[in-house]
Length: 136
Image 1 (cartoon, rainbow, N blue to C red):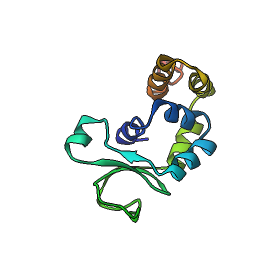
Image 2 (image 1 turned 120 degrees about the vertical axis):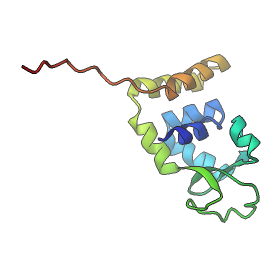
Image 3 (image 1 turned 135 degrees about the vertical axis):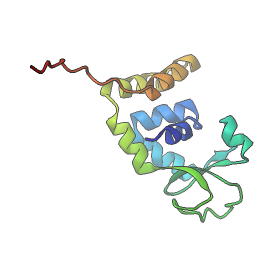
């Protein structure tokens, strides 16, 4: 995912992000079918008068006014888009430990557990250091 797509993902409720990480096959259709939207929390997007909107193909930060949900993924009104397939690919690329932590936090009754897990979930994945080779 691009940095803007991750930024778009953080516009969702922490429990939704955790659900997408843990079980995208359930949560993508759940979000798609509820067709949510709203004013973004990101100050830059809010100042630009943009809106978060859910579509059948994914979610977008876009200009207001698409009352009939007619904009496609390539509509010029979108500042950033994220498809359900991209979300599923992101989830599947996560290490199993992160997905399990997301599952535990989503089931927790403590909001701080959710917020901490989202922060960890969206942190860059550290690659395993490789042995240093010396060329002679």
